[in-house]
Length: 346
Figure 1 (cartoon, one colour):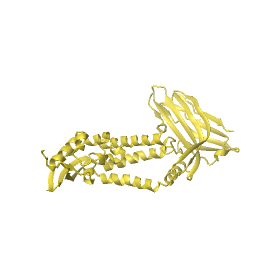
Figure 2 (cartoon, helix red, strand yellow):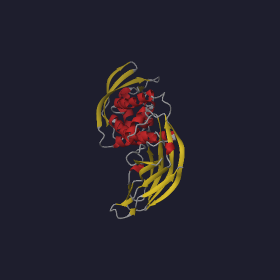
Figure 3 (cartoon, helix red, strand yellow):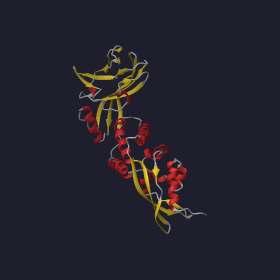
Figure 4 (cartoon, one colour):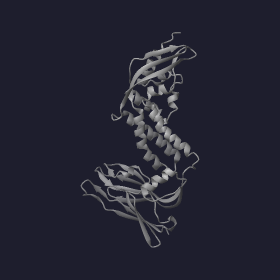
């Protein structure tokens, strides 16, 4: 059987990877591509690796040493800086991760976050704003039982594929340490105290606005980081357990023209002859949903979730008043006036 040189193995791997032939590329590695596949899921999909391969360049591999069943091959590689791409993607996705912490379907939310992280990573890999890095990598090779040289799947191999991989480990490593530190933290739990209304439709011509759910909820086992985030957003101190008003809605522009619509602008609660109003546009702690964008460009629809916290004890609330946004076209000539929706609790 013909046994190729160590440089042949490296050249075969790099060429196959560049062409997104991952089956052939995997055959040049001692553990296939499994080492990469064991990393963060958002960094191991075929779409992710293809995105790297599209702008992947390398020079002629040069043998550095060969002794017994081991060899070292040096090669110059230019590819996208994965460290920069990962940092940008995490910064983009983290606010959404905080928001989905209040999603009662945690399994569905986790899958959505994985998909979002993958798409964000790919976007930043393809972006011209993400730098390309040229580095010289020394790959370690070892003969297998058939005497064929295979690339050892160590950190040097990762660096050959994922430029500045060490930065990625630092970023995800910090997340892992935080996860480990909170392993004893009970899972966050959200329960409905009282359902107030469902499927209430309002005409904000040409916007069809449907309040799908209004309910009073209690969340418990809130992490310290999440407590800090919510306190910052709402300007109200919260602990590991608190109650809030939850509103889920759907808005649809039925016109071909562009309109502005802000969903629910204010929420007022009444109790014991007093009232308390919260500006839900600025103090909603369930952030980063599509409803936050008030511009409706033609016939589009958006889902929105609102979470607001009151000083008024939930059990004392007698009535809830919602101020529904007006709708306006670009010239403020057409649309609908603000509307008020009220719901009695007692």
